[in-house]
Length: 208
Image 1 (cartoon, rainbow, N blue to C red):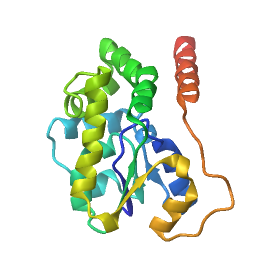
Image 2: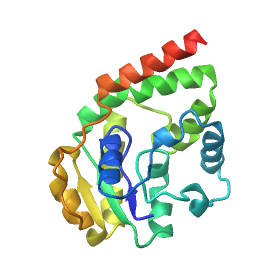
Image 3: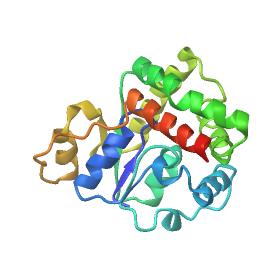
């Protein structure tokens, strides 16, 4: 593992995944590696409930990990991979909350109501452990700010990049000491794209 993403979901983590893979840090672990994979959902559920850690096994073959569920264990991963660099993706807390309220939070509520394995996995790992099963704006944005403070205090400055994906390739490539690609920095999974993806999945499910 060469790069650990410590940022919350909806902070540009999919764009970062794509960018890291373009820079040679491939493959990069992301929630998309988990959704739709019952064996991986169960693995993370077990971890969230205090199961035995096998980080080398979980991330076998991966050079980077960003987004939840991995970033929910950022402290453990930072210690387990002492040579890995750490990227904390950030954005304006209110804009982050608006994005969460349109995408991941309603998806979670539906999964919890339907008692899916995904819902059972994210309940203890994200909504309980991180947000205390509460997601009003004041509480959630304060938790977001506190997370940023916790990461910046815990990780040494020479090992950490606090990064907004809108900053583009420059800070990221300098931090990772790699050449800057000619292509534009990737922009992936905005709220509209997220909703379209969820709608498409539902249409497929309804057709089965």
